[in-house]
Amino acid sequence: MSSGLRVRGQISVNEDLVIDGQIDGGPIFGDGVAIVVAANAVVNCDILARDITVYGSVSGTLLAKDIVDIRESARVTGRIVSTKIILADGALFNGTVQPEQLEAVIRVAQHRYGDWRAAAPVAAEPVRLPSRPPYGVMTTK
Image (cartoon, rainbow, N blue to C red; front, side):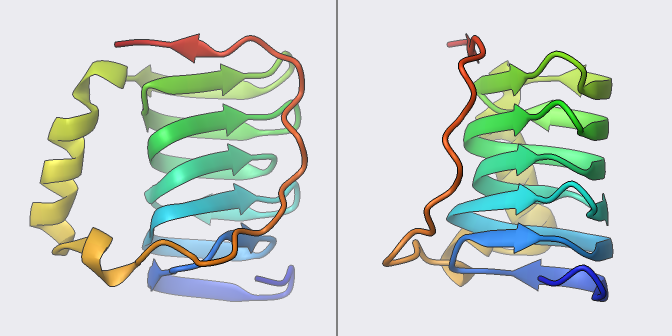
């Protein structure tokens, strides 16, 4: 999604997505995919995906079945729900982390938005994303 693009409303993807524009309202659904919020992106909505990596600005709930990775340049306000979280030195985060509530939050999202997992099947060919920095990973279970 290019930097000049501004989107309002719900987005459902079935392939990995890099956001470099502005999204308001959402949510963004991507079960089984990776979503990257680029450094210049501004996202004001919930993101539901397998992996979420943030370099830019996000205000909303980040729900990831695998990992949420908040990089150095990121600014995140809201709630993170995932069993694995990376918060890089220098990243700004204001909100709550709820790793133990992943399954409950997924059920609430399904009720609220319909079966978003059925609407976004796993991508056949994943996009190669930059390798993760050697930061520690916080894992809970």
